[in-house]
Length: 493
Image (cartoon, rainbow, N blue to C red; front, side):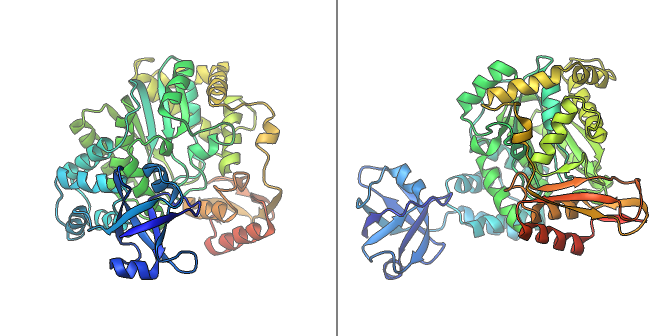
């Protein structure tokens, strides 16, 4: 069937074709099925079908910007449309749902179709659910990692070190501090970080308060040449892009399976050619994993790393409560800078953990003898070298540490939350605190969030402020207060 292209100035994040309902009926396709689009002399592209009435004639088709750019289309160009069959990979997804082990070839087929946008979000969700319910053994997880790397780009430099946390702990913003310390010694540490998935902020969200985080691979190489490191968003680079699309679906389903987590982390490290990798595994009652779960996860990391010929070390850390004081992009950026500048009111728990992790990396990379890494990391931090390196990286990423009061201005509204009774803080629930910060507007509204005045073990008086909520509107303040009421994140005994 031949149809005329109508422009709607629509970018959907994937190839989408919108057609009149009667046109779809003639093609025998339905919403979320696929059509193949071809312009004479061009390659074809598969798109997901959407149907609309009132904006299109039967002889017209509206295409998302991704298709228009890929095929070089102009308005009123004529394209050939035909129904496209389901990819073979859908059969393999059904196999995983039926608890069958997948070969490398089948996993690679699924990853290729995810990257090519040949699978719908529903089909990706079935794959995510199949892995979550039935799991993957070590061989499958290794194959998933390799397939993620194969279907993406490679940074193309040999970096010295990298680190990653499995997440789940609010305010755990160690990465900018660690990168600044390690790069000060000459180590190459190009850190590609994530945006928030279920948390109030990811490292990329925090750094974006100060500098740009989206660059081409060539520009990142230039930044690294100047500074030895970078603090960028990995999602813009096409490094293991199948993983990024799977994560989007996981966010919707609130699922984070071990196999996907292991493959996601190690695929990104392989894509940046890291020679020494440190994995931070926070554990605790309110963390992603229990202590036993952390031990088992560490064993899996080691087994998979050996098969992939990666030098990986794991460290189990206390994740029973938030780390630092700020939860939200601007508030976390303030914590990071206060540590790098050695401010008297800096969060010492975040500083201590950052020094410990940086110390281990310095030992792994041979910059410090075993047992001496933390001492060197502390010396670099206290000397001001780490802050200068952080400034250099921020400036190389088209940012600045000038006028910080303006750049890190907090949301215009705030509300103190007093203790309902006197006693000792015995629990701060990670998920609940993140939910309150997200209700306040994080991470989309970077100035929003939660500032914690207490941690576990603090003695408080009745009426003493436990936290302060920041939000841009009264409505968001009310949302946060409602979440606070329902979740009760801070418990006092």
